[in-house]
Length: 241
Image 1 (cartoon, rainbow, N blue to C red):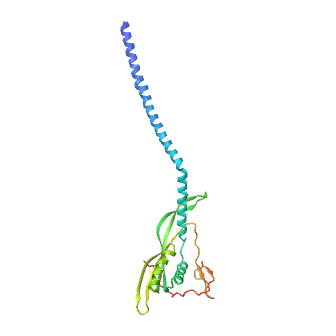
Image 2 (cartoon, rainbow, N blue to C red; image 1 turned 30 degrees about the horizontal axis):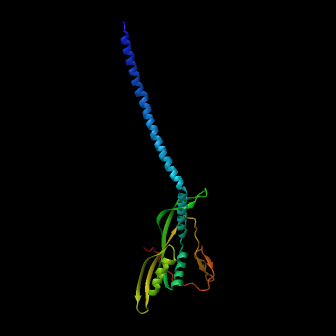
Image 3 (cartoon, helix red, strand yellow; image 1 turned 90 degrees about the horizontal axis):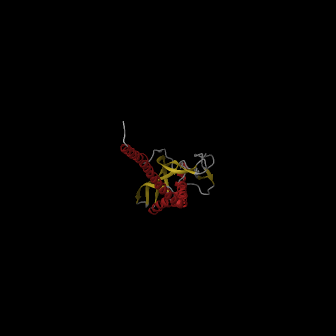
């Protein structure tokens, strides 16, 4: 079969067009798409770089804020005792008698109850601080007593102003016109935070008489010139609500 020069030229032109189209779709478009992806990556990298530079400028402030937060949490933890024993509650009633002048007729202990779990700070193996779960408890004491109206006001103020992590749960008093005194009982709550580094500090109690063993076992005795108030014995240890 004879092909004319004109047909050969047309075939060459057609072949060139096919090659151009293939190069356009297979090479140029692919390169264009890849170039767009690269431009997007560059823009993302520039944005991330700008963000990190901004953080770098503020890193000193962030570190100081972290340090301030740690100091705040540690100080708040330190305000809570690590535990509250029966001896602590008894000596607190003695303290109220000495400071306010109330006359106590009897006391009943309230068993500790876990009220929540909080995230506190504790030293880790590396010597730094890390968050650790700590249990918050509430215990208390039901006190029967008599006092004047002025002493009642002083009592409320003293509990909330002078006694950290102590609160007045309830009071119930009636007035006796013959004596001019208020008679009744009050429930005082005390909170403590277990599982932190403060450690339990035993209550200090006055010396006991000869022949009387220490009923608490963990209490340090310190000399005291005045005899402590005497409490009426009670067999009622039911939890107060």
